[in-house]
Every structure is written in C-alpha cells, then in structure tokens.
Length: 400
Image 1: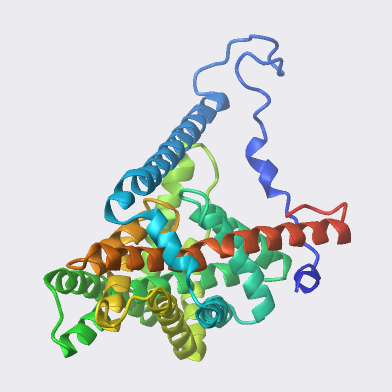
Image 2 (image 1 turned 180 degrees about the horizontal axis):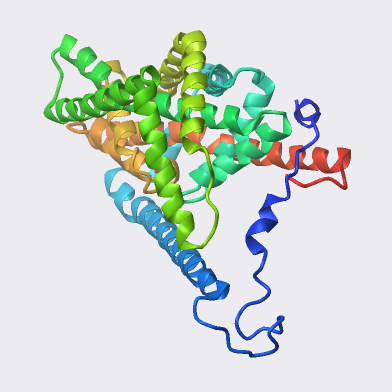
C-alpha cells in the first residue's frame, strides 16, 4: 500500500515563501534606506504590523486552546473518572476477556476502519480504498493527538491528495461534502435513537431535548445546502458576499485580493450538484454505515466485558452513543477525549451498582482505545513511510 501511495510525484508551487517577500526591509534594518533610517508614515512596513499582530494573537489563542484541552483531559482522568469507576477493576475486567470476544473485537475494529475509508472514496471520486486508508489514518493520527488539530489534519490530507493528482477544487468539494454529511449524521442520530427508545418505552427527557436540538440544526443545515445547490441566485449572492469580505480583508494589508469569487462559487455549486446527483445515495449510505459500525464497536465491548442486556440494552447503548456524539461537536479536546469516557460511563451506569459500573467503564475505555487510540500509531507509521518513499523517489523535489 505504501508503495502505491508514493507513486505520483508531488506538485510544488513555492507559494509557502510568498508571505515572506518584502519582509527584509523592516524598520531599523539595513535595507535600501540605510541602517536605522526613519520611514515616512503610510509606508509599506506599517502594513506588516497588523499582520504580525494577528499572527501573535492566533498563536496565543492556539496555546490557550491547547492548555484548556490538556487541563480538561487531566482533570477528567485524574479526578473525575476515578470517582465513577475503578481503573484497577476495569483492567481486571478487560484482562479476563475470552479469546472469542477478543477476535470479535478485532474484527469489528477493522470493519470500523474500512467503512470510514469507504465513505472517503464515496466523497472523492477516483480515490481508491488503499489511498483512502492512508489519508484517513494519517490525518486521524494528527486530529486525535493535537488540540484543535483539525486544521493540521486537513493539511495532511491535502498534502497527500495533491501528490496523487487531485486538484484544489476536487479536494475542497470532498472536504465540504464529507464534513457536511458527517455533521448531518451526528445531528440526525439522536432522532433515530429516540425512535428506538420510544419503541420500547424508555425515552428520557435528555434524549428528547437532544433530538429537538439535533433535528433543528440538521433541518436548517439541510435546507441551506438544498437552497445552495438548487439556486444559482442564492450561490451568486454568497459569492458576492464572499468577494466583498475578501476585498475588505486583503485591503487591510494593502494586498490584491482574489478575483472572480462569485464565478468560483457558481462553478463549485455545479460540481457539488453533479457529485451529489451521481453519488448522493452512496455518500449517505456510507456515512450512516460508518456511524452504525462505530456504535457496534461500543456495543460489542459492553457485551465482551460482561455487561448484559438487562443492565444496558442496545437501545440505551445507542442513545448514549448518539448523545455523546452530539455533545462532542464542540471541539474542547481532541476527539472528545475525556468528555466521551465520563459522559458515556455516567449515562450508561446510572442506577446500577458498583460492579456493573466498573464493567461499563471497562467497556467504554476499551471501545475508545479501539476507535480513538488504534488509528494513532497506524497513522504515524503510515505517514512516516509515505514521506520516506516520496523523498526516496524524488530527493530534490518539494517535501510533503
């Protein structure tokens, strides 16, 4: 797989150096005006200061976000989770699992990964399953370890996709469609869980409220997407608004902004409409399958750890899965780390004794290890091998 991932040569544009042009003649430098020479008001050096200030603030926000995420994770696993269940008891439950259950969990973990890759191939025509696996594992390894690492993970995905010959327009369309459909699944899952619990008379107030919120967001987002894809006027208006915003933003730095933004929005609308017309059902089915298999991992872990249907039914397990996915749409920690474990354990163990709570905690920790932790080393090894193969095949070319 790694050899196939490295077949295409990378395309370097050299754009990464553009932002540094003209930075040498800063105030007080030995530029054309001489050392320490005074510069008149309104000179171009003044335009660098707002940009540098924005970059400083962006880095500060990023560090504060990282500090908050680390603080939440430490607080959860060091203080909150031990009050709910015992780590020692949870480990004893996991270590006592039988071989058939271990094999079953290995199988459902692989299935969970493969279904995610299938969803990616549905959203990006021309991408095969091996390369979808490479892109998904590499980006997930970043997203699951870096607070606010979604943007970096997106850069990793683009780095790989562009090396395989995909254009910026294709990747942008893939990113937006896959992101929208993933969010649709997150906000729509509580409604499915409410139907399942209502069928057995177990619906509760928290799930009803989550369903109302999720359904409202889902319908609003779906309505906006439908309007955008079926109306040239709506998309043209968005393009004009984006053009005005870009003109204002670049004007702050005395730079020339992008032209023909409205035309780009209309072209994107036509490409998106074509993708959804030809692959809309495939994309929808694959994202639903990805959601359901993710829950199946959790249910299998519960049963493998000795949590029977009398303690946690499949309906309650699904409801907890739906609620926590809705909650973690707010990216406080990478992949909802800490919040997911505490939230699911507390919800599923409500009203049960200490022994049952320990088994549920063991199951949730095990499920998170299989879905959250497993892709990290796989992705790190995959991306390292991929970069090494690119350097070997093109040692003088631009590095990924």
